[in-house]
Amino acid sequence: MNTIRLGSIQDVPVIHVRHPKATADISLFGGQVLRFQPANSHQRLWLGEKAIFNHSTAIRGGIPLCWPWFGNHKPGPDPLSQTAHGFARQSLWNLDHSESNEQEARLRLVLRANEHTLSLWPHHFELQLDITIGESLTLRLTSKNTGAKPWSFTGAFHSYFATDDIRQSELRGLGRLYLDSVDNGTPCNGNGTLAFAKALDHVYTAPETNCVLSLPQGTTQIAATGHDSLVAWSPWREGAAAMADLTDDDYLRMFCVEPAVFQQPVCLQPGEEHVLKMTIS
Ligand SMILES: O=P(O)(O)OC[C@H]1O[C@@H](O)[C@H](O)[C@@H](O)[C@@H]1O
Image (cartoon, rainbow, N blue to C red; front, top):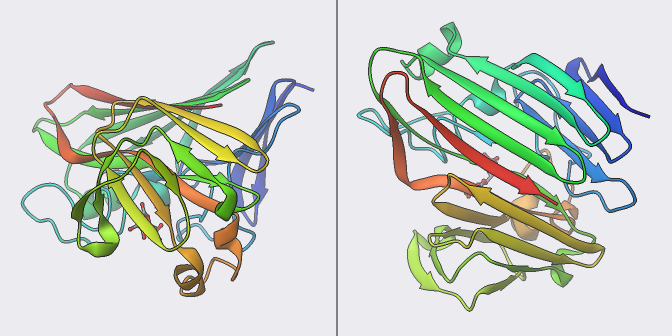
């Protein structure tokens, strides 16, 4: 089967890609890949059964796009924000193009400045998300300044990875140096391998290009460019209990690894662009 079909989950438009090399689902709300599973291999992404599909709440799972800021601080003169992780993950994107051949399926999603985005962030932009689905999944997020003034952004691929058991999962390639966000951003030095045993929110500031997730069900690999940090996050039991869109034991089956523009906002002059890229295999 080789099809690209527009369907929906609770009225949210979702593109279903069924290809001999892989299957994937992509929500136009958020421009968000929800699932990616190579043929004869394990599901790479986690999507919560309690994820909310209502055209306004950010969908918990898959790969939310944090943009044009990460966390609660916008870069620029007016930093305080009510919208955590920017507005891209809560915006309706347009499908600009889709095609497929024997090797892969390709989609291009686009989000441009509109009345709503301008009310939150007064800049003209075009965001282009190129998604390639084949033996691996590649996301290429191009940020373009289409306005007349420079602006700066931060952001991330907020990827939720599926694991059969977080307690038996180990990550390598994050680097050693990290800021511990659970402890007010204290700088720390790890041993190069990350295992999970409690709530964790780390910003790795010198990541390697490739990150390997050793999971009970197999291996997942992440390669990224255009970022300056890798964020690793698990809400653990207590964090999950405080979130309406997580079940009590969801924390055992997922964690996030997020290639991010975090330490140094990227400044784009009019006409300039930046590419953040990630491949999951
Ligand atoms: O609940 P949200 O807004 O999707 O954020 C979840 C987490 O996202 C991570 O990227 C942050 O490092 C965490 O601090 C945050 O709690």
